[in-house]
Every structure is written in structure tokens, then in C-alpha cells.
Image (cartoon, rainbow, N blue to C red):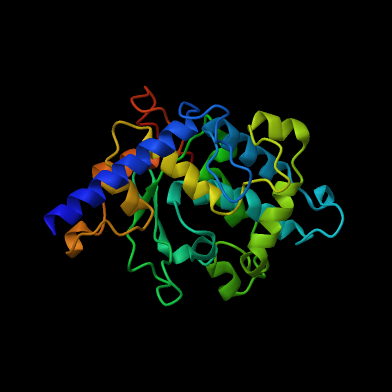
Length: 273
């Protein structure tokens, strides 16, 4: 067993080193990154542009046989991309998150997202710290959530108001996100360094992949903590190991809010609504 554990540890580290080399274009000429398909991580700058385009997306932006031609779905796009990355949650789980599992703290908000169809309360996850970033408003989860809540109608049913995302978006989010990504201009693709893919490698899983790369590049983040943030098993037993330490989680929350590690504004307070 000891030999097997050591081999697993070695190959996991080797795989991480290989992924970093691909991302930094060091290992191959021509580089293997970006890939020609599937889903991939994008840089911090590319993700900021992605969020900006999500805010600018309207029903008129869609052409041809687009999916979800209504303002509620368009309003959900920036909400999705600004929440999915800091929470490191899968699309099918995040779109089912309820407002009752969002709570405030002194300088951040905490989320619990579903982990399975039978775990709607996120009991198999933990309260993840999410921080604001007023200096990059297009990526700020506080701003997008505040706008969404204030945009709700007083005539909405209790069931509708309880969910963060409208049912129309939750049921068709995969196709709607694909329609949004396909609307990118050639200049956007060049800025994002997406290559000349016939199908752009940005999917609903891109936020989580991008978050993994961002945490991996931060020297203040333990990799086991990053895996727990993404609701992955780290091969341990015992409830006390089911979540990272509070300090680690808050570091990850700030890093995923695009705060440079050690930045002077690291302790900034969030905006209030």
C-alpha cells in the first residue's frame, strides 16, 4: 500500500507539472495550448473579457437559431460566470443553488452549492467564502448577485424567488452558454488566445478549470485545499478533513476574486446594496 500511495503521489505531481508546462508554452513547439477542442482554462485577462462580453450580451446579439431569446437568460450569463469561478462548481449544480444557502459575513459572503441531485442543501460541501472585487466590476460576484436580486419582481412566486437562477436558464444553460460563446468576434478570439478552433473550447466547465490554474499558480494555496474547494475527494477520512481551513478558504476566495496575492487592498470591504 505504501508503494502504491507513493506512485500515485509521484504521477499526480508529474501530471500537474506537465499541465503547467503546457499552459506556459514551455514543453512543446508548437505549443499544445490552446487545444483544438473540448473545454480548457483561460487566463485571468481572457476571463475578464469573457465576463465583460456576458454583461454586454442581449437578445439582439443572438443570430440564427439562438437559444433563450429573453432578458432573464441574458441577465443570468454574467451571474453564472461571476459565480462559477470563485465557487468552482459544476454548471448543473450551480444553477440549482438556492438563495437560502447564501449568507453574509463581515467582509464576504458564503455559499453552499448542491453536490448531487439528492444533496440540494450542499451538505456534502461546505460554506465557501466569496469576495468582492470592485476594481474589476465585470467579474465581481457581489455586483452580479446584487443586480439579480434587485431585478426580481414583487410578483414572482416564492419558488421562483428562492432560486438564484431562473428556471428557463437552469433548464437550458448548456445550450445558451454555447450560443453566447459562438457570438465572440474574431478580435475577441485573438485577445483570448483561443486559436482557430471550429468549436471554441470555452464551455460551462471553463470557469472551474480556470480557477484551478489560478489557485495552482498561487504560492499561498495548498493543493489539497484547492481540491476541496472544487468538491473533490482528497483521499482522506473523517469529517474534520472535509473542508479546508478557514484561512486557506479565504485566501482562495480572494485569489479567485482576481486579487493579486499580497496586494495592498487584500483586506478591502465589499460594496453594500
